[in-house]
Length: 292
Image (tube, rainbow, N blue to C red; front, top):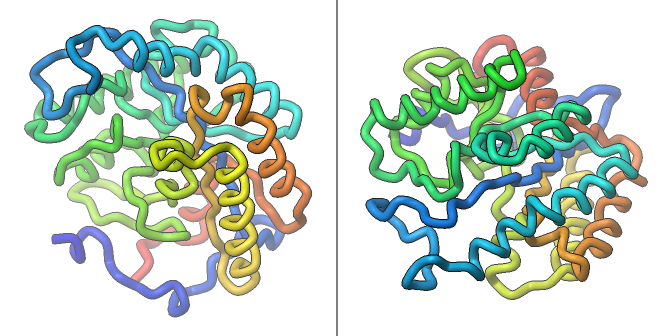
């Protein structure tokens, strides 16, 4: 089934991918702006709060720090560096925190929907229930912004074998659910066209933090990752994704190493700083037909 969804083609044997103005890499900064329920539903495939019994005040408080403080600290940095931002957004966040919605609209942040809450998992969902959950995100986004939803990343990285079909059916352009490549790729679906954008689980502060690496380690990982793809981008355009969570990287002791890494990127030539939707649209413009 996977070969039907996603055709294999070595990156050194593909038509050359180019970016605007001859850039070597397209860089998108993804800020995971999430909402965790204090008391999530109990009948789910995973316990959202492993510290039991509930409530897990420690776990909840850490995540909510991202919305109360961390996001605003990160916003100061991305504003200063003039960096476009794509939100991996639990749509419930905007409903609970209108100030975050207003800041998003003011800065024209792109949105890759991340479900309603990050404590509602899509594992084992039947097709109709998952379709309803995706459509709810589409409708909330349209009602709040008047625009179509462009991107999708399943909540807490949980999905089913139906997810690509349902995302394409909803009219969404790109997905961050797959972590298989350094370029956008087409994903075969039953209805419509859906492309995957490289989203990082390695250059992702949540993954690094779980393995007890700290801010300086993560900053060096970002720099090394970027430098490799920037060098390789002379022959074949690449995508650099930096996945951040404001409750992690925007802690006071981690924001300065992150700033160092982002300045390293901004100071390079031949870099296209873009949103997820901009990368997807460019790829589709250059590849109006599915690549063979």
